[in-house]
Length: 324
Image (cartoon, rainbow, N blue to C red; front, side):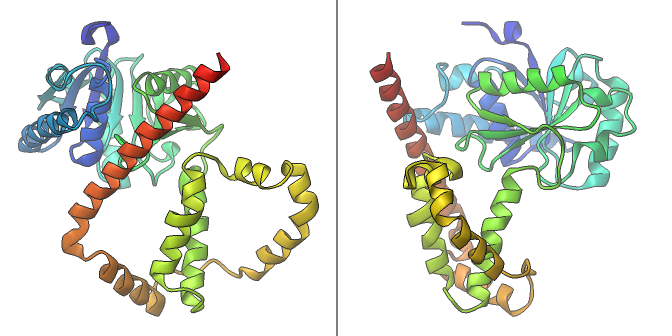
């Protein structure tokens, strides 16, 4: 197995859940990971939390990769100097707060000290990469690698280039994401919301309309996803689900395209998430999951996602064995 120095160095900028998740993911296969935050004490706290989390995952048999928790943690270190972070890094994964001015300032700093072959990758879910890379010398090295929260348990990563991103940067970023066990998708160009949030917002918008129009309450809308669509979508995409529901997509569209058109026409304008409906949704959600129970519910979510990942891997491995 390659050592961390043979694989190369990854720089993580920013602390918190996303930064820790990226650190663990890169360390899971042996990359040398260096973590930086503008607040030095935050780096130390993050390293403690990372070690604790890795040991906890190992004790439950849920740790990713073939390395032990101690081996993975030995790949991770902290640094208080941005220049030291970027030195010899093959990729820098930025995880700072979603504040455009902060991102522009950070990338301008990086642009002055980064090496010409280092990939600068952002975890942003909000800002197009062109927003913070347009005036950089090394703008061709900037790409978005947007993870899905929580990244350690949900493997999808959206790779989004700016108009000037070098195609080789996109290819290399995707290869690194595949190497650490994530499931990257590559957008051909940047669009607001990227792909995942555009699809998610369409779903949330209709859920909102159903509550706003008094058709369903929040618990029942949630059940549509968790006990209905989500059960299938955990294993199949939207198109294949339809493909299997009929004798193929062509047959489905022949039978239902006109019905779908009528439903689409009935949906109305995109709702604004404010006002009385917002109060109603918030009230019902907080009854379902009180704010003091959020950490407990997140732990439940993460455990479910882990077990689902194990099940999917087992099913896919059995499928491959049958085909071989």
